[in-house]
Image (cartoon, rainbow over the protein chains, first blue to last red):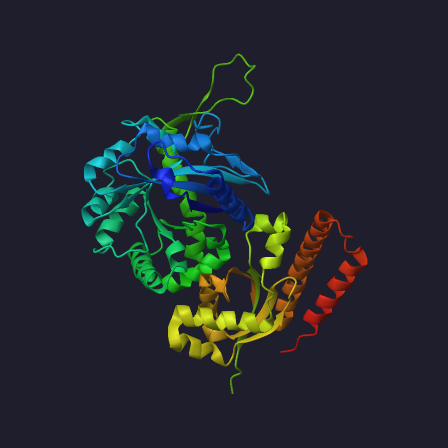
Length: 292
Length: 169
């Protein structure tokens, strides 16, 4: 099963108490439908915020409509999470699962602590939390596991002004953090594409293809590509088709499991699961889960 | 003496999102440009040039040829030199426009002989023609016109299947 963990919501969604208009949601629905047609099983809608996360940022999910043929990981009426372990597991044939993702653009290292579930209940609502470091210092903090995040999502289309060094990236790999490469900038103009190849090939080299997650970062339906076409694109970055395929499936799933250990478990050791039949009088069984 | 080797790529050009294709509206249908084999080969050459520059474009200039392109289905078969096949595939992934119209190029099959590519193309062609026929029918119903007959569909299927299987190296 293939995953696309970044379908971008419009910028207005990143503001506290932000709202999206009907046509904007229709465009998101179009992207979800396109991803389903291309054979993806799971997509995540990405809300990009600047700095600190607050409870007001969650308001956007209440205004989301249902999507055709899609299972949402949250309840559209209340905006609350539907189940703790909804993010991983199988998706029925012909359906698609829609998750919520948060990307925080950090300019100050202190802002990162608002992403921890222990400090901020809002962070536990998201199925996956990513940071977009604005400087090398923030990247170093993110890679060393200072904050409870699942993914490091560097902006591939822009000049960073620093290099993602193997030492830093290696730290992220030992922490089990995923590194995102989104291909949306590659479809933009020539200068952006050139920068994208520079940045993405740098990440591919530093990680040697480990823990890399391919995502679309799509803003419209025609920004999406089929998984096998992305594997072809990976050749440009010296990622062979096997690594690309893993970046679209196994690595993305690992990132979701990493997120699950944050939100759905006690200290990443134990998780409780509701029995399907509520009629039984037995106490709820606790099912041990090994950490991912 | 070593033979010059090629790869055959079966590709599809999508001009609109899948939900628009499923539930068509009259005004959208008319806005879509008609594509030809010439437009498809231009698309391949342009996207290679955009992605890989003059040297990339030069490598595929001679060997690249669009063998077949279906106007209804917007699906085609292209021959490219084997050494530069991966480059062409990557360039096709990065293609965003055909002419002025936004598009996505989906590569459906790659093979070393045209025979296997024909087989894959005919299989895909059937699906696409049936989908196209259903869409035309829905459009006709919405417009109040008479629906296209089923005999036209089977004729269309046979015609394009024989066209694809008639291809030679």
